Image (cartoon, rainbow, N blue to C red):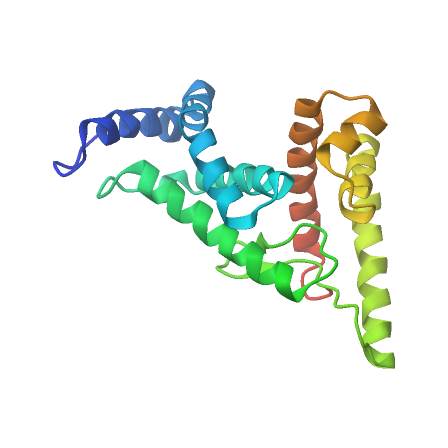
Length: 202
């Protein structure tokens, strides 16, 4: 493990944790990194989107993307700088998509090739051809959601089709709020994999 001399003491300590996560697949290291920066990322997201549920989603997505790409991090600059850049870029994509789209299964998803994919369905002033395309996209979306495990499928329907808040979903399903958030995160991971198979059709 080679540390860059321009890193602060705090950043060097972070890099030690990053190496545990990256090289040793140490789950506790991931938890430690998330614990250190979760609140900071959340409040930054909240400031950008002005919505607590969206900020929660974006915080989870930021850590998910960072941890999936942790092997790409190099200690030329602080891990926190790298993490905040991922979070900010993801949030900007979300805001841009939200302005364009009225119905989306999960805002923006990285397709693993530097692009983005999602179910984008514009709803106002559609001509007959656009209405047909919209129906096709909804049909494909339903097909993909139906492939999820029942508990995940129910949560996705409540969140993205009925557009309930996390609190409303917790109340309706009688599940703890933390469980709802954790299971939705896992459901999104499964959706991403299923969507890869449908790429080009959505």
